[in-house]
Image (cartoon, rainbow, N blue to C red; front, top):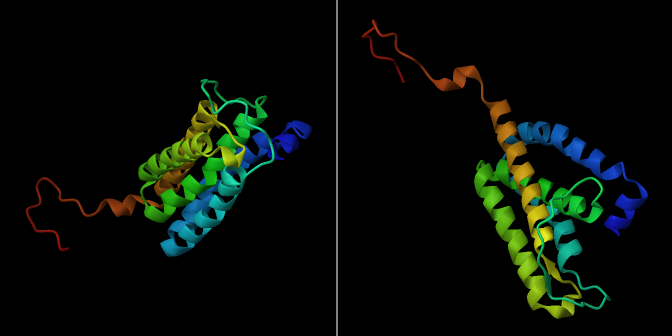
Length: 175
């Protein structure tokens, strides 16, 4: 379904990626001024497509349990690009909600590995695991984490550094 859309409209995937790269840090910056609960809710909503596209059973027959390959996604490899795009929003939002983007990255990589393992161990899903999917999901998680880091940097101001003491001034700085 998603792959068909990306094949029919080759501009769609790169456009979505560009929008995520531009809007992601701005959304993160806005969310950082709000209670983390909102970011967690949006993260949960962004996980719905991940679950639907990876764990809902299909009617196709699986010919191999797990494909092993290490192909980097490009704009021409629409399924791999879709896998990248799938993991950017949840990791971005988890990084904003937790204020720990690198921990969100680890969670995204682990979630993708768990999905691929489930696809390998549960033939009833009609899906096969693929290391290329894991790699693409992990790249998407990395993009999401980097965007969350950018958002947190946008929030910091020069006056957030704290008071400084002049080398010659021995007066204590008030807290």
